[in-house]
Each structure stands twice: as C-alpha cells, then as structure tokens.
Length: 174
Image (cartoon, rainbow, N blue to C red; front, side):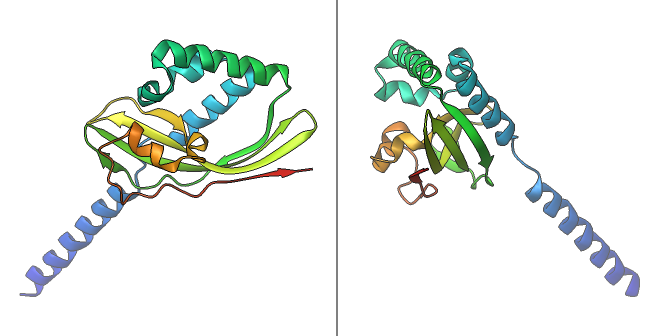
C-alpha cells in the first residue's frame, strides 16, 4: 500500500513539473522581433518593417501597395525629422487569444522618443498575430488604435469583444 501511495505521489509530482515547465515556456521571442522592428524604424529600413507587418492592416490602409508606400514615406519623414528612440522596453505578452483562423496577443511596451527638440513618453502595445496553427508571427503597432480602439475588430473581426488590449498613454515631456 505504501509503495502504491509513493508511486502516485511521484507521478503527481512528475506531472506537475512537466505541466509547470510547459506553462512557463514562451511561445515565441516577441521581444527580439519587436526590437528589430524598432531598430529598423529608427535606421530607415522600411522594407524590414513592412516584411514584419501583419497583412490585416491592408484592409484599412488602401491595400498592400498603399500601405507599403505610406510606410516608406513615414519612415523617410521620421529620418528627416531626426526621430530617435531613446529608450524602449517590452512588457510580458498577454495570453494568446483566438481570433478565428488567427491567434493574437498583445505585447505592452514603454518608450521615450525624440523628434528634434520634443520628447514623447509612450506606453502602448504591439499586436502579434499569426495564422493558426503555426504561421509566422507578424505585428501591428497598437498606437494606431489609440483614437479608435474599436478598429481592432475591423482588423480581427473574429476576436471576442471581451478581449481588452493593454492601456495606452502618451505625454510630451521636456
């Protein structure tokens, strides 16, 4: 009887350790991808930014060609204005949410950016999304949803309305 009890306890502990290891294993290194996107934005590499952008944005950006042209113009303009990211950090990704044939999560981020003589402190998020079950993770900058948060469901119509993205703030600092 004692051996049976010890066997059950040992199996339970083994199961618990396997389950815990699975729960803490990151799904993807979102932070590494986001750091590359941020660096590409500041160095003017619009093509890399475009290659890492989720195609859901094409619906609201005049199609793929319109999005690519606008992105290249904006990144060139930022370069001309001396745009710099003085600090940037990613927070812990949220849980992964089902969105029909897609799955998405939010990665909070904090940054301090400068535009010439102005500094902006921002708290926002990136949206990481991929086609199920194992598509490539691509990204959208959540700051574009600051003025119209409901646009999230234009991009991902099958995302449950109960999903709440992280908060966003922006302030000009001297």
